[in-house]
Amino acid sequence: MQIGPSADQLSLRDGVREVLAADCPLTLDRRVYEDEMAWQPLWRNAVDLGWTWLARRNYDGADDLGLTTLDLVLTLEALGSALAPIPFLSSVGMAAGAARAGGAATDALLNVIAGGTVATLAAQSGTDRLPGATMTLSGGRVRGAAAAVPDAVNAELLVVLCSDGDDTALAVVATADAGVTIDQVESADPARPLATVTVDAPAELTVPVEVETALGPALLAVAAELVGVGQAALDVAVEHAKNRYQFDRPIGSFQAIKHALADNQVSIERARSLAYLAATRVDDPSVGPAERWRSCALAKAAAGDAALACTRTAVQVLGALGQTWEHDIHLYLRRAWLGAAALGDSSSLYHLEGRRFLAGAGR
Image 1: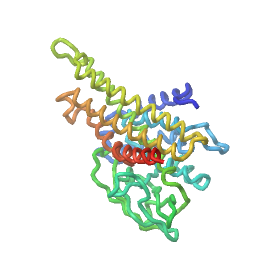
Image 2: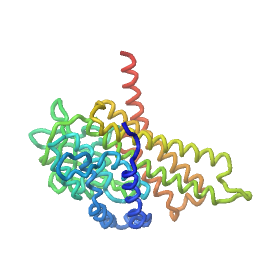
Image 3: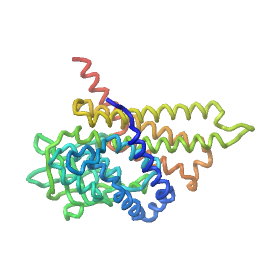
Image 4: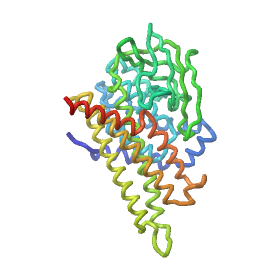
């Protein structure tokens, strides 16, 4: 089992970075704060370049491009570093990631997402910190509500996890249906809009799934973006620490600062390694569903903690400069806040896996 990117995968990541360096300055993130449609040119570029085809990774059809989950992780890491304000994570990472659990039955849906249709995953209730089936399916109709649904205001399709009697199903609902209500709520990061979604509408597609099989890849996708966000914030802090002088010395030479930055580097590398391992296990048919879920959940928990630590430390290292609206560091902190809470915060995920480990050790 190879864990980590190949030369071709690193080339893909570098190509994505080059495009983002030219077309996605941080000023674009700020523009979306004022103009909610300012992300669309970058999204069209991403679709034209084929990035959205990562929704069809490991595809067995004639158009197979040989893409893997690790390719998606590397792309999301680059998008996170650039704070790209496009619905790539919501659509290709979360919605398509969950839909892949449906097997061949979701091929048409994945093709639509790969073609650039924006979808999002509704799997968070307003009362539970962990994701799951938030709606019900009966007679081909989806009913229920989901909270904190990312990019719902920009999506054409909702991918929903539903209780179907004693089973769980994945359903797809068109946001344009009269039975779908999308109430946008205040988001800590306006470039990543959130909404409460209420549904009482017919499903365009339903397929039985296991909840954790569907949610694992979505958790991993969020983790990958968080790694990019945390790394970029750490890079900003390190550069400032090298160039900001006090008492005729760079502040990075002071013990409190250099130790904090070193701790951040360790945490982000741990999160990155866990994300790469999870990507490998998601694509490995010899790995069981429980182990795949555990790898994705731990990667998400580690990435959430690392991104929050890196962005908070960066604000502290920048001092008064980091408290201003004009400096960009708060943009990273906002994205880290949202990502760390999405689909379960680290405390909830660690608690869940801890209880399962202890239950297994007791047998």
